[in-house]
Length: 292
Image (tube, rainbow, N blue to C red):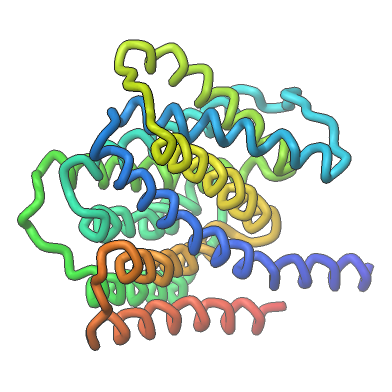
């Protein structure tokens, strides 16, 4: 019994690490999508993200010595989860056609707030005052970093907010379904649903990619595979509301992407914001450990 408790505590301690690693990769995927939507349709970019997600996922089954399977005790919820991620991806990539990546991320960061608010309803999790305060503080930190402005198209902000809502529900269902299927088979369901739907739509809006275009499409799929595998691993071990503040670690790679690709070197306010975001996540982790 003690051994089982130690194992559960060890997994709970790893959950924030998995989430942080995943969130460091997601802005890189969004950044490549931002580059792609300049030359290709959103439909084609989303198609590439899912096709290469599927292609890069299959070798992982061989490495893990696991048999691919679409069997699920909750097929409706699994399909719903896959559709939510597809909706999240399509809406956010579409938003990037209208507004800068930083502005889109500023709106998208309402997702942890939505997730924390819905966790008691969807997952029956208890969300205490400390978690609420940490999430709100973390959100305030993103405003220091991203400094969203009202100069973008209204439709872009609306799409980004819709994406955040889909993503929050996707994370909650991921947590709900972690014991129903292995992480790899859950990803397989996600990849097949997205690839199937987008393959039906892409012929109507196709433009032959050049070699760099194919490379970026491959990169979006690879980053999607790895990041969402890590998200599922995180949800296996941690409460959704407990992990919510760690979603703000996207800020780190989003900032680095801005420096490397666009030459936007962070100012003092950015570093203040990063400190606030990291402090909120560390505080939640400290509170969780006090309960272990």
